[in-house]
Length: 484
Ligand code: GLN
Image (cartoon, rainbow, N blue to C red):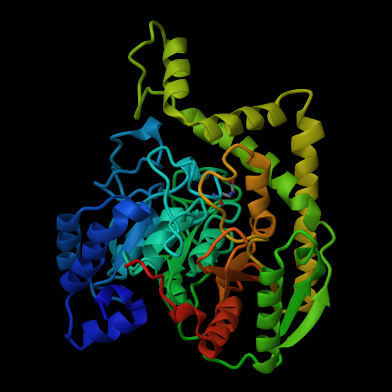
């Protein structure tokens, strides 16, 4: 078996026993990428020599010798950081994001730039300004988004693990579609300094991995307070890896009825219900709960996210970096043309929508109302976590669709986020992990099904522990796509 198929935890043992070296692992994942990534499109670029050089200097630590793919919106000094957008063509990061500083301090090697939807806006990776990414389980299908490249390279064994970002589901949904584990940390757990902002009150960086144990290891490495990000809380980082084993007997797991509505694919519903049974047999208690404002989450999310995006993306004007239109004859034209030429369709759509909901006359009707509803959504979670330790839900109501199928229907695409956006609005943590396989009605190949465990703010240990026990009792995570 190639080294690239191993987990961080397995490689740690092999590295410590001096049976392998970091270089062997880098070669193993990049040889796989060279062989097959032109079909998957998970990477925008990689640099083998830089990875060797970083490996040679890596300090001792839990990630020493482990190559980790980085979503193309997290700054890694000397690497491109184009956010899969034409407006940032040729932009090279001048500094390391804090999550990367932390990753390096743990010995990790930032490897390659993972494909994504442009500026993290999308659910399918089709909005990448560079190229689409494909699902390793069925190349005709989307890998999910916006961290589609991060999920695809982990699933296809072209990276041992990856970092992604999640504003409304962008780590959890692609992890579910590609059969890997994805964790959106609580707001304030991981520094966002050096993450290109999409919606600043929602964004978090988090791991995509092959197992829950690896997610615990990687989260432990990147977490922690940061004087450069005032939204990053000064909470100590627990030993996530160490807390996986403790018994889950007696833990209360809530099934929110609003997450099991009519629109959900029956195969997904029964996989998540079977997972609930599995948790019961592991000693957990299943409790029905209600979260009455769930239905509002999608609308609230698309108002708040676009409002914040319209402000955050104002900085891309062709003056300091990125694409500058050669056609402009004055400054106003330079702004307008650089942005018109550089941004893709979906990004423009969202800037317009965000500007609209913030404009005078509409602010109260849309933005202010959305903020009030956001408080009610957060209150739903506060109430639920008074009754239960965690919530169990599907990640997506439908399996990954075929590339191009929903391209002309943004609303259908937005519905892919129906179960994920509320966690970002509430600032809580969420873990996505495999819980089955299904063959979509319009397909011949099996694709993974994911489930979501939601935890209270800073209760990552609880959802990781639950996820780990489920994973130990099942073998979904051991299946590999047949890439031939
Ligand atoms: N799909 C959602 C959106 O398009 C979520 C994206 C994300 O989490 N970055 O906004």
